Length: 346
Image (cartoon, rainbow, N blue to C red; front, side, top):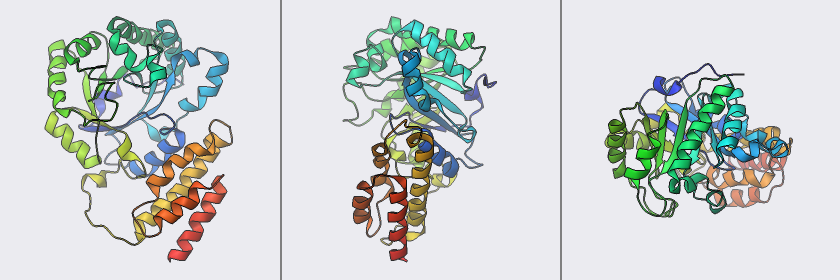
């Protein structure tokens, strides 16, 4: 299946909101839940999903490709959906993007910002900030792969403001020499990881570089976004076209819902209707994880436990419930423990 969407970016309502690619988090089960409960009629043209990042080198190896295939599974309700790929070998990037483009994704994004030591050691992720010439070759290779697949989808880049120090003018100017439809900036250096506040004031400077390039490149800011209203406020204040959110999404299946642009400030100590709904959705999330990722033996159950703390908080008995859930070994145990808890609370 080849996507016929030549450039969905230009059809998005601004400001738009993006699900950040997070390893072992933004898998098919998590995205399905976010799409089902968060993509409503008002916001469907303002929300973009990213996959987990997948290794281009791995997609060029028959055995590794089979193991990585689950990262590139998606459902139609997630559209527009962007596949993120990382790598530092142009030929492998070309082959990987040819394969990814054949799967019908709306776009391909190249990760040039991951600070993980194992990724950087390959010269990939944030490592490409130190080799701008190679980074440009990687972008061209992605386009060649897409063309080889007979597809017509855009390429974007996600990166940071520098490696050891801020290097916006030199680094971003190089990236803008290539054909990219969108640029996501994590507003920290690779060295800073997420240990310091994101520097949103740099958005205006990057915007000027885009204007100077004469290209129509959408700018997406990323870092320290608390909720959807905060994302909208940051976009309007700093002038970016969209905002990408990572950690703020945890435990909130309704995160992208348009109602969150008009959030309620009411809080309650009891379980509450919303918390009860969230626990039921946790059961559903776990069941989808089981069907899509556990039974095919793509992931182990411990990966799902990353979500328990985020789902189970803010009400009486939450701590005790979390402790019990962390001791579970399968989805059926999760379902039983939550149902027992809800019966006791009624």
